[in-house]
Image 1 (cartoon, helix red, strand yellow):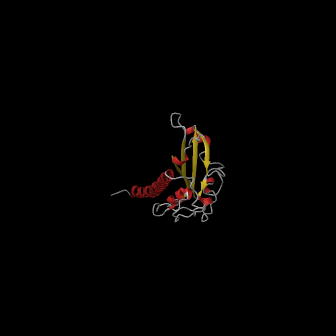
Image 2 (cartoon, rainbow, N blue to C red):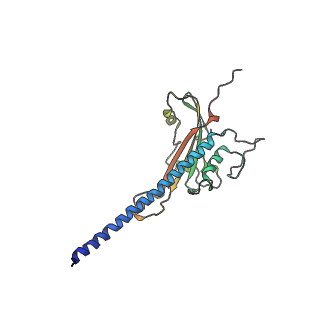
Image 3 (cartoon, one colour):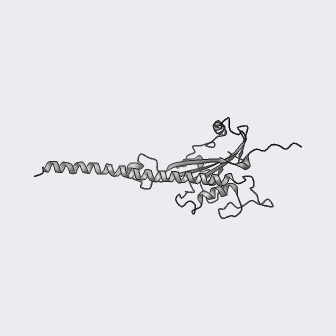
Length: 225
């Protein structure tokens, strides 16, 4: 006949272990959601950077000097806005929903001459185009400079000119153009378990980026008269 004390002890041990196992399983599931969101955002920056690398960042006006509308439905190319629209397109990106108060897409175009950054566009301000600033439907106002709580954490571009110049290899072509597409996305935990939210930030900032050659930004020799 089984010992009742032993049987009762097993139930107590099971009651102690099961919550821990469930928390571990839930943590793995949450980590899977986070990694999926991270990789999705990374793929979006790659596709957007490829799109931007094949287009001219300096054709920002239409015939007659008219500016193209800053709208994803516009057929006329607005280099920066349409690059960001590729990321926002629900048909292309059905998995990440951006919060217009705290998320952002940041784009920079650089001209490098002699392995030195000589120009950075947009030329005004800090040289970073921000969707949260450019779009009238977004309230974030340069959300790339902030964390998910709205605290300013960056006072200059994530990639400064000096940091980029330090990446260049001496044997590579010294004259080049580069476009950088960045996503700043606040990931909200899907399960929101108390055991996780107590120790991990919720939402947590995801920052991903891609760099591609920008052929139209490559410096050209000055014509000799």
